[in-house]
Image (cartoon, rainbow over all chains, first blue to last red):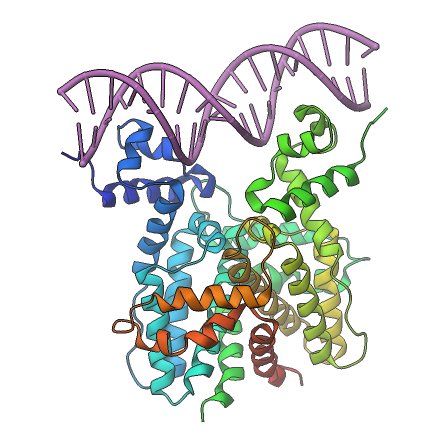
Length: 212
Length: 212
DNA sequence: ACCTGAACACCGTTCAAGT
DNA sequence: ACCTGAACACCGTTCAAGT
């Protein structure tokens, strides 16, 4: 008789990542959290990679659908924002997501929703596929740059993060990098929702002519 | 008297990553490659993270400038493509780059070049900063999705990669993911230069109205 | 079938010692 | 100052044994 469930293992592992960052995840730490010998986890997941895949699916399951209306712009914005929000809730998961291919049912479902949205709006299917991957690349890249500079401990507030970035930019020598220094305030705000929306809207605007 | 140089350590470590993927990098393996005791490397780099930062700078140093003409579109395309090419040459480096903030001189120099290009073309500086980060997010995200599914061994040809992806999509159940299946051929080609250019051009088109 | 203790082959990093 | 051997506190994973 099993003393645990797969969901319990996933929950414990995700808690480790959320509390201590990417590197806090280990089979041994998760086992300790669950009060079980390290090798007991191999009953539930054959390898560490399989556990990570389950964690990724768990995070993707938190991405809610967005509006189901006929406006593809709002639909893409909604799903992309929901994905970014889910990744921002679990910043330690980002390096794990980005390091391996995503082919689980949740990942496929997310893509399918975007494709359906675009095809229904009149995009030729192949263009829809290209748009999907382009948007995904942007969202994952943004999330990665966002998560990259977070400390491993508990998450700082957005104001603290912007302040930290501003200080970092002040160390940049203005004689060598004048434009970088001149735009430090804007660059410091790169981690905000507003900046995410800015790039996403540019992407959507550039995509629009493809919809005949 | 030092028996090695920092450059030798970086070269050996990069060779490990290129040959065996991200996980092939370890202080001990690099030391073995150089014929030296593991802890000898701590003379050259205080931590593994410092070595990784030097590796990132090395890869960014390989990004060539692109055209210096007055056309900002060509300039952004050139630098973004050069960055993608450098990352594609070192796919094992991508998870390392994406996992940590990039604030070295090469990283700053790359950003500065893009900012100068945009400001010279008439972008308001703050818009230029936003454009820079948006393009970076796209390039890094694309590179990450690209690198994610590469095997750890020697790199397959592009044709082999597309074929592998096509086979993977054939396993997707068409009754649950009809659009995904219908666009499998296009999706299989996502790793190609052409797809990278496609998304980049959409981004540039969406950005253009910001240049007054 | 599932858990355990013990082990194997790894890590990054530190420390005391030698030159 | 720089290298070495040895050690510490970790990893993922395997294996034989117990229930």
